Image (cartoon, rainbow, N blue to C red; front, side, top):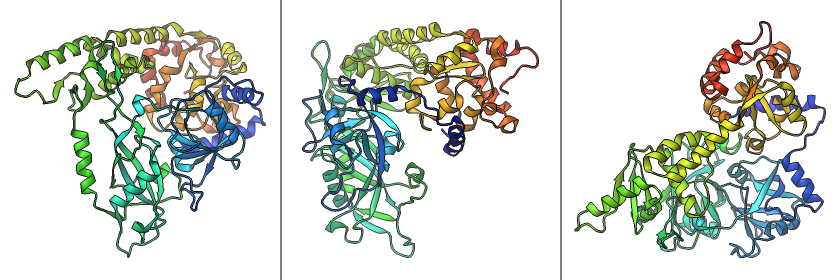
Length: 545
């Protein structure tokens, strides 16, 4: 979690001290290449975000809630070299940030600045982007993991309701609401956990006409009558175990419910309020049809029950690479009673929910001839699971990831760190650890500028404590860790607070924070000697605590 209030104040101070000094980042270099016509062969296009109103505009030119707007030039660049995609609207195409679950439908307009993309406030939230920042964008082509949706489950809240405490809650027709939603979302790609903003319109909403709703997608269900499937090496159909997004069709069932307490308005902005002062009439029929859709098993489906009671549906042939698991499935299928051939097999395995979820994603990627990416923490988590399930490919990938981590670690002089940053890199130092965070900058929730401006060429430990209220952020450190500052150079590392002109008044990281940080990091630091290296510092030299 990032303390955005602290981040904005300190970031403004750092920018004022920077004197307009500009760094060249990878996105800047790509944007420059595009401007000079040297990036025609690149799949991604860098565009600056322009934020517009949260709700669709009224009138004939109303913009659908899943549509973004780009300049004609950007539209043409995004559409290049990706033919064969059936567009959901005439002249439109799907776009997203590389790797993002959220997908939008693009439209061209000369009203948008060249090199820009216009997004609503809710779209910015879904894509985790900030206004006036540059990001890479690419064309998205739906595949088997984004096929037609059979069902869509949503939670709803009123947005900025009038003060009507004395009035009865609004009554909304659930069927009419789903009809409008299906009409506005038809042909668009929807993902789980996505936020949508909808302005109610038309005769069914006489009292609520113009009322705005905020909806959150809680689940997406595949249309199993049209569900695409890959094939294994024996030609047997393999249905994907996970569906987290898909395309809304005319047959997509929808269920909207109201949930207490309401979604925090912080998901939008501080001046917006959410309320549940409304009632939905006629939702029971849709709920029964959704429940039937969720309960219906696929042909060849096996339900894997974890040691904590949760279960996952998976096609039996998907599990073949897991030798031990596949053997257990075949044994259970052979032992089932002959008078219950239609029953779904429930197989109990001694694996926790989070680990099995990641294993199934890895298996699904393998079916599609992709290798699922693994970070260090995930590799450490999944290696014993892969061994237990007999999944050799996963064990081998975990070994490669963990071996690469050990091979990249070394001891750096302070001069090496400064020189690397002078060449445009972004190594930061925290309690003597050297962290390479360059690839993380575009994903940083506080913006990609604040880390280079405040944390390079100083000991940044105090900033890490100030900006991160949750210790969940510790989990990223090992992924970025590349080594240590040599003991004789620790005294040469300036404090971040001194470099920004705060002097001693800003203090240093607290002893409680340092204890937690070292408790987490010392086990993986070089030679497990982080504490020993600190103890070896000469008396009187600077420490970050």
